[in-house]
Amino acid sequence: MNIVDLIFQRATAADNAVISPELRLTFGELEARMNDCANRMSADAAWPKKSRPRIGLDAPSGTDYIVVALAILKQNACFVPIPAELTASERAQLAKSTALDAIVFAKNAEDWRIEPVTHDSTPAFDEAALAALNPAFIRFSSGTTGTSKGIVISHETLLGRITAANEGLRIGPQDRVLWVLPMAHHFAVSIILYLYHGATTILAPASDPKVMLAMMREHGATVMYGSPYHYTMLSGQPDAAALGSLRLAVSTAFALSTEVAALFANKTGLHLTQGMGIIEAGLPILNLEHAKDKPTSIGQPLPAFEVKLDDGELMLRGPGLFDAYLTPWQPRDTVLRDGWFATGDIAAQDEDGCLYLRGRVRSVINVGGLKCFPEEVEAVLCSHPGVKAARVSARAHPALGAMPSAEIIPQDAAAPPPVGELRKLCQERLSAYKVPLFYTFVSELPLTASGKLRRY
Image 1 (cartoon, rainbow, N blue to C red):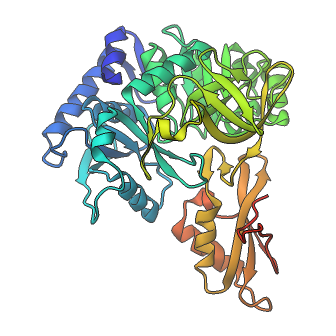
Image 2 (image 1 turned 45 degrees about the vertical axis):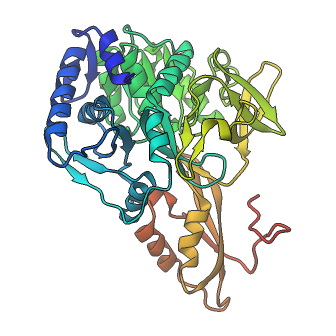
Image 3 (image 1 turned 180 degrees about the vertical axis):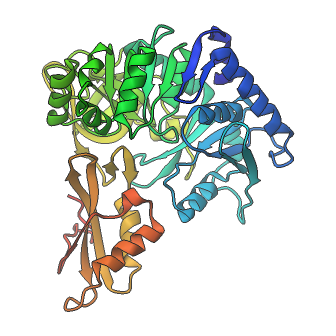
């Protein structure tokens, strides 16, 4: 089975599939472009001569990203998105962790090149076991260990999760979805879901609320999928009330605050629907019933899912759960606890069954929907000769949800290293969102009984 084949088997060729400021493609035109791109890729001498190669994609978000990504999936290759914000060392680590066979560098669907990737060691996972899963995607998230690991999603699992998610979203050919999120981070239970269910995806520039509103009006958007940051920007527009014509505005990526929810509702008359998206499970929870009176709740589980709290930790059970962790190799059944997936989120549930996220079991920091692991930042800080020890934690940020903040024990308390040096070091080795915004010098850091850093 290939999810791409199913998309176009179901589609009406003359219906609009994707609309951007520069281009409009029907499903028939999108399929033709995808097939042309796929044929040229497979004929390229640099395309890996093996079944189910792992192909990274480095490309800007837009219509052509969709074309090239579908072309990769069409050839039964395993698609590995490469986010634009990664540094050279982070890209190298991603390529090594996934044992990429090649990377497609694409300016657009016609202007791209394939660069083979060579490795000096064998993969840290079972290639035969991976291929047997019929893998469609490998994405990265925190899993349950507080360290980034590859998450494998098969074509069958992808179908299960977009079907389950759409029991709540109810997206169909009548819908036009206004899209503003980065495709390297949001593609499977979004772009793939919209295409599979016959909706039109309207690609709007994420940094220009005026154009967002103009495209929404011009093309009659019915659904919007964005972050609290985008809804805050839109609320500040003189004609923000036009957003009230949407039937559904989903808030995702990071926590929705009471202030943003109230601002948007006051400006538009529409209440934001917060959901919980998680790469291991898709979109299992959505606030469909209490968006008005409980806007900060992530809502209730969608019909296909069950939830429970295990000593406060949110557990999930349902279709579309990930197939395996890549490194170290862990098939799904070895990770689940009696069929339940432990999300790593601490949650509470009220008398209506509405769920509220209260924090993380472990230390990952959510910066505007991007995952920052304190251990990675601490390792960079501690590589400075003037740093004896460091602890990185989350500090609330009004627009991004949280930002990393560093506490540092200097080697010499009388002459701590300049903050500018520490910031520059982090900027050279880390993505911008991982660079601490705040630096505090301390004489000691709290430790657990076993001598590890205390995170809370």
